[in-house]
Structure formats: structure tokens, C-alpha cells
Amino acid sequence: MQNEQQPSWGPVDRQVEAARYALLRRLAFAMRHHMVVHLQPIGMITEVMERRLRLPDPDLGQVHESMTKINGFSRAAVQSCLDVVTWLAPEDGVGIAIDAGVQESVAMLRSNFNFRGFTLKDEVGAVPLEVSRASLRNVLPAVLVALTDHASSPADVVLTASADVGRAVLTVTVTPTDGSQGFAGDAPYRLLEWQEVQALAHADGVALERDGQQARITLVAR
Image 1 (cartoon, rainbow, N blue to C red):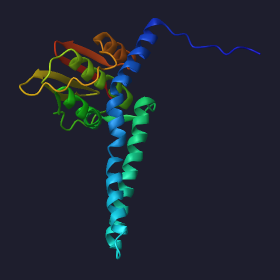
Image 2 (image 1 turned 45 degrees about the vertical axis):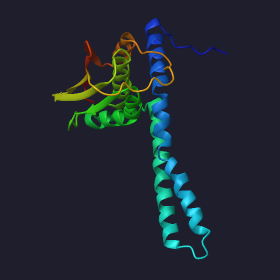
Image 3 (image 1 turned 90 degrees about the vertical axis):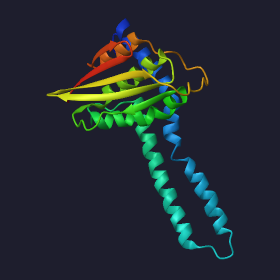
């Protein structure tokens, strides 16, 4: 019986895997919120529906309306959970338009960044160029986390983009502002270092440049 040949892993591969693990640990809070946000209203609607059903002559129309709402939130919750799974285990060959990809990352991270004193501003506009969804999900959140890890709050984190033939350049700029510094909260798993972000980008074939508190991500079209 022959032993199966194991893949050869070098130091660069292990650095990339370590960076991905650190990024996912940093995104865990946002992912948890993303999964439960549609579940919270279900409990409240259920309590209201139970009180209505205890009435001597319950309004079945209102009960039916409540059931419809519960069904809608349940479907949304299932979809959110399935979506989070694709963040953990990306689907090969799946593409997404730059503008839509930025929107889903910002939607995932906005609450967590607000808590830390950073305001995410999506000013990408309409950029329908399709790129690798997995690459965008790996690199953009990593850039956002690493830049803000080494910046002072409060600050605006502005995302803009431009598209050319066969590629798009996504720019992230951190600009200090006046206002609340956010909350310290629990200490993060650990800070994300820029060389780790570069390793992730290189592994995904994404060009990455940084100039102070601004980063440029160049993604090729699928």
C-alpha cells in the first residue's frame, strides 16, 4: 500500500495561511453579527403573535401577516449563514462586480468599524467590471483592517474605484476627522501587519501599493 504524497508547503505558503487565519479571526465578530441580524426580529414578532393568539377573538389576518414576516426573516437568515460560509470556504471561479463586492464587504464591516471610531464610506459608484470574488474578499477587508489597526480614530475610511480595460483600481484612504474615538472594547485577536496583507494579495494575484494611509488595490477582470 503506497502512502499518499502530501503537498509541499513552504514558508510563503504558511505565511499566507497564517494571514488568512488572522484575518478571519478579526472578521469573526462582524460575521456573527451578519448571521444573527435577521434572527433578532423573529423573536420579537413571535412574542407579539403569541399575545394576539391569547385574545378571545384573535385577528387571524394579523397572525397571518406576522407569519409572513417570520418566513421572510427566516429566509434572509438562512441566506446570511450560507453567505458567511462562502467567506470561510470561498467558491472557486465565482466572480463579482467591483461595486457589488465593495458593497458586501462594507455591509459586513460597517458596524464593527463604527464601534472602533472609523466610518466606512463607499464612494465607488457604478463599476460593473467583474473580478474574482474570493480575491476581493481576501484583500479588501485585509487592507481595511490593517490600515485602521495602525491609524488613530476617529477617521473616515473612503473607498473609490476606477476601471480601465481589463482591470480596476480600488483606492482606500484613511482621513482623520473630529468626533468620537469609538470604544476600546475587547482587545482584538491581534493586529494585522502590512506584510501579511501583501502576502495575501500576492497569493491571489492582486497588485497592492501603499502610500501612508492610502492603499491602491489593482484587480484584473475575470
